Length: 244
Length: 294
Image (cartoon, rainbow over all chains, first blue to last red; front, top):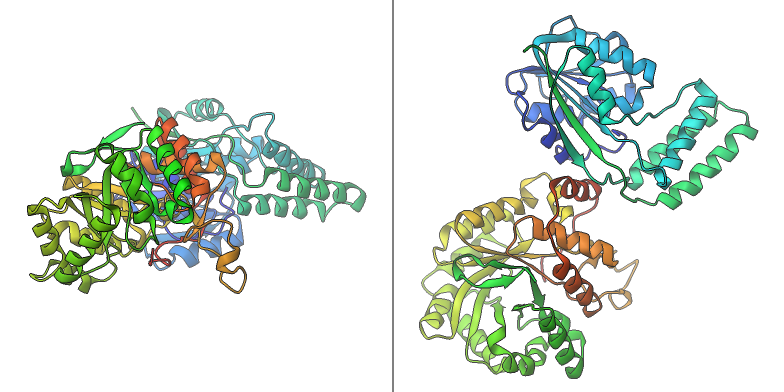
């Protein structure tokens, strides 16, 4: 989900998702730059320019630190609901584990913006996590993350969209569907991922009264132990293009 | 158990090779039982070395009994002609056999060693002479070292028939030349060189001695291994799915049965699952190449 340390290299998930895409020589947008995994992948694959857009200052700094010596890279802090790029200006858009952190209203706005900045022959890659199985402990942990953020902000922190839903959403904005690939099956929820979920819970609960927040934190702690770096669920990749 | 052609040797090796270092930790009766157990699973490729304690001696009785059923790899750390001849004779003598199927230069780590073994008075000249005399059938090489060095060896040694090197998700997740054993695998396939994978079951390096002394380690391995059946199966499936000819079992006898079971049940691993295994290991520390001296 883009919370882990960047480490070295480009993850195989990113390489796989980009393998059949026209990256070389193209102007690319990494929508929701995270720690820059896809930015690194786009640069590695020969992008002419990469705009890495994120609304998170830490992520922006991480991406700059990781890839900033490449003069093809522009890291922009901005809100993807008002993407700071011109209309028809991008040849390839990537959204790697972005939709999961967008609630439905934000997703609707962002899809509109990604479509606006796309050039007439633009390609689009959307990678994300399928909804977790109902009986997965990891799903219960996500439920606690969302319960805390719903109480604090009135919206969920994480939404797991089925690939069919995203496909129809982008098709509804005029994108033509190319393919769906399974990137991860199962998804490894590493200790770093689990700690990141705990951070999300704490970010919400510190804005709640203790009688609401404390039990949620305690439950999240217990669930992290229960999940304990298991692998469950799938990550998919959808590819689309504009034009005929 | 599935078999795969071991490069130009033409031997159909089982997808699991029995690393006989496991015999080092057993009494003779237990060693005999272990070999019977491994053979019951259909494993036909064994690997031994004189530096595995008394494993050669303990393998001897069952090896002689089932000589026709076992493709035997052995190796030497000698780099020169004389030493290699002497060590080969010692290994044959200790095991009580006439021929070693695959004799390997063991543990190549440095570039100058490649020059030494390929020189006129190098180990390979002894290997070739032994081959002419019928003491050895095929020539191989093992290394835990720089992948570029193994690739150079494949390019330079025309009659090299196998290479043995580390391959596991922790290594596969490292995106640098120092861990590019996948590149070795590709080049070996290009040259029809058989590939034996080691450290498939490595979870990481052992903690430093200040935290856990060698005698307190729960497994007789140079590295900390995965030890649950599901983990062992996942690691085996991953290694076998990379295209290695065969995966060498690790050194602790307690783990061998689980490895045999994993190899026996192997039916491939799809790409999404392989990526999942690599992704899970992406931030782990690699036990390679820190622990070179196997």
